[in-house]
Length: 209
Image 1 (cartoon, rainbow, N blue to C red):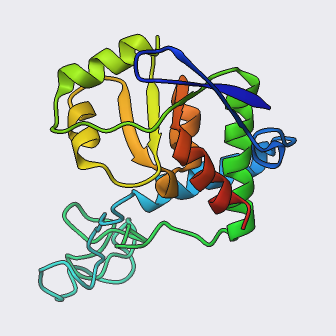
Image 2: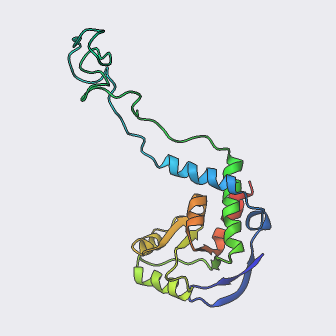
Image 3: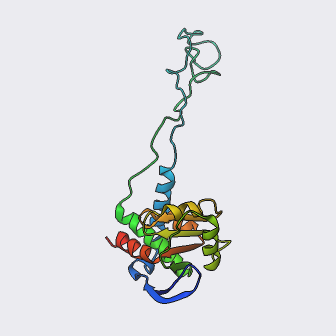
């Protein structure tokens, strides 16, 4: 699949880049996409929920009433879960919600997400650019020139560029990330994927390992 390379003014440079069919033209695997997105969201959970069990509640251990004959449930001390203010049975404890997912499955998920974008013609390739200093106005001009204003746009750079990142930071519905940090969720969440010319090669290297 060939895509024309645009400059930051939105003009066709006359160059084309080939999007590898092994990345942008595969048979998408929806289950792999689901697992990778679920893993990302699971890793973002704090997992700090905690409730006290009966052994952790502060209170006397004196037995409140006789074992049988009271007409109610056996309850032991005041920390019993059947009493208000008592401990909780099987309450939440701090935990890690992450799980293991094979690298090949995660790679397949990213390829599937990129394939979906290619099928939707939602991939724009722009020549490499940078700014001398962070300037939001300059980045807005680039967005308008590329005709992606008003859309959720994900700009993918070959490496870290602080000036570009800071220029886009305050713009609503626009994200900037490096090709090495590209993930399935961000690709699917964007309406349009804007790749710089060099980022195409970096994405290819990462996903064809």
